[in-house]
Image (cartoon, rainbow, N blue to C red; front, side, top):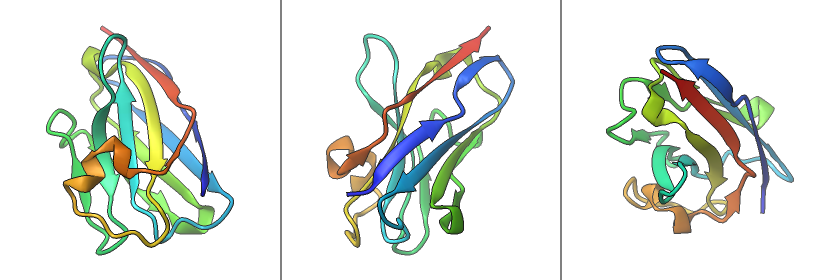
Length: 129
């Protein structure tokens, strides 16, 4: 399995931007689906964004569409979550996740946490209004 470490979280005012990083180690992740999820206190973990290595398509939750993007840098073995126009409701712990190597999943499946085999430790994002 690939090991994932997130960074870049912090406190930001509403309307601001943050970029989260997810660095992978153990092996390259060019053939892994990558996802970002978040979990707010008292709520279930929810899908934010995903990247499908088979075809290179991306997918976003409706709540972040148009504000967040999921760029990746294969040379650095890193995937990012660029978050713009942040809102107080974006406050949560953000997790990155990777699927198994070479596993091809549909866009729907990439929204399901149980489809991922590797998870980072999470990074806190707090948006003040």
